[in-house]
Image (cartoon, rainbow, N blue to C red):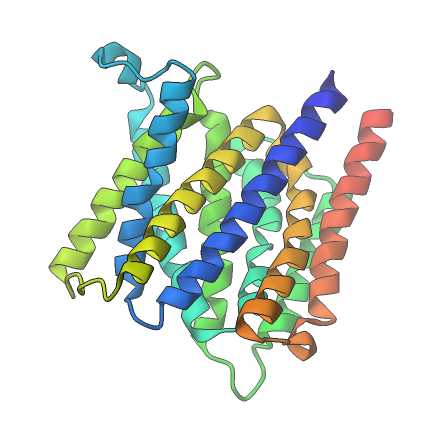
Length: 295
């Protein structure tokens, strides 16, 4: 039963990763015409629609307030703020770096999940997981190249985004088991949307949408992103985050392929050998978990 649940969780996770990679491609395309904060606001507002659809499909959406009340609402709203920070950093990174490079650094999220699971979930991390984390961050340093002449703090934005995304994923395990993933996401999504809109209105304001094509892309960005996040939420509640963490690296293949096909990018000289260290760290965690389960 445990193995079957893990396989289902992995399947849902991989689907979520594919959705989020597709969303990132759309965002990088739109960043040529719209500001980071604008796209983040649109993403969060439209992104709550999949949550409503899922609640309607499962019969959870009822007008009775008691069905929409969440005891841990402060934690849910906090997750929304975590996601907002992560989104702004991620989108800004996409505007200044190659798609595959940002995606590769984003997969250090798995390592942050392991680290954050220690103080937040009380998970025990032994020598093998510690070595895996060190390998992963060594790979991140090789990609970022902090000693290179062209290095800037903007290169660290994907790592900041990965840390906040990991924090939002680990926090999912703190919710009561009976709380649905869609209701949890609805609260977080509303909090993120409100935060984004307040920031945009207080700063630059919203630019007019330039064409019907852009409008369709913005709607697709929000819907696909919302579905992706729900998939990650569902998978995180089906299995321990640290067990699922290594499977995030399958998204490196799709990210590299999308960057090459859509944007004509081929940053192989920056990706290697750092990306191999990141993947090796995840593989080591997976191997150790399989050994521990068989003991």
